Amino acid sequence: MARTGSMQQRRGGFQTTARMLMAVCVSGVLLLSSGPSSANKLTEGQQNQNSGPGAATQEGPTIEGAVAKCVLKTTAAENGSSRAKNTTGLTLSKENLVVSLQCSGEKNAIVPKDQKKVCSAAPNAKVADCKGADTDKQVTLKSLLGTSGDIQWEKTIVSTDNKGEVMTLKIKESELPLFDKAFFVGCEEDKAQTRTSQATECKVNVSVKARPSTVGENNVVTCAYGKDSNPRPLEVEMSADNDTLTIDCGTDGSLKPTKYTEEFCVTDNSQLESCTTKKFSEILPTFLPSWWVSDSQNGSAKLTIPESGFPEEQQQFRLGCVPKKTTQSPQANPSVKTEKEEGAQNTDASTSNCSVIVTVKASNFSSLASSIAPTAAVAGGAAALTGFLVGSF
Image (cartoon, rainbow, N blue to C red; front, top):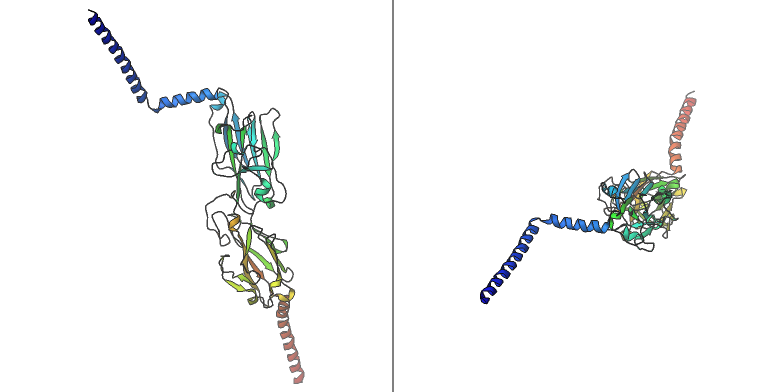
């Protein structure tokens, strides 16, 4: 009897264990059949638990003209709205010299805080990486644009109740860089910790188009090397009344051809770096290399033709500036190379050469002689006719 009871107890234990194993298996099958949705719900629940009802998120940037807007939302109702983003960013150029960044929302602060600095453009760069005051991820506007004086953002609206701020950057055309540049700024919730989640930051990319190459007073040529800086060759005219030519390549450019004090590029060859050259003496018979004065420190050169050095007939030559390949900035704005007119011979995808066609007018003496000759011929003919008539009587 005792043995029979023992056997019954064992059977009962086996049955209980079997039921437990079956329950575990059924639970596993149900979990697997539910797919990733259950895992997602679990993750979302953990995130919601971590973020709390007052967690903040950024909306934007949205671009309206030259203004980028970022809105920091903190309430559950606000967070439920869509987070529209515009990845085109802002552009500084000759046509648009003003941009603004508006950070709205409680404790929504502009990054970087230093009004003379911006964030260096780099792949996958984040606003949080640029937030600290001593970070190497920032660059001064003076350094980026290559200006002689300081440039800084100006606070146009500062909310007294700590509900955000607005900053505006205004520059002059002369303060545009010689190369296309890029940087970014942004908005981030102003918290005590140095890093916050990406959901609380708003990044605004800014492209800076290089200035156009120009011809100024007294034939002063200032060259730039942006993708759109040189749609066509510049044209300069030299005469006895305007006998100088200054070409300013800047410290990041080189004057071509290399032996510019002796030779020039022919006008029908647009390639400055591999052009067909001729000697200046072929078009200016009395030419001397000393007519050129170089300023290597500032990257410029000046040609002066003396009154006696102008040719008997009008002449033309070509020269110009090309960017130094070793000076391309890491903040250059990458772009796709496009073929334009002959002035825009690109050295890479985001630069162009500055080509100048110079017309040298004929000397005043030659012009005077050519105008005197017909008059003298007429006078001589009249005298001969008078003599003939007198002799006839």
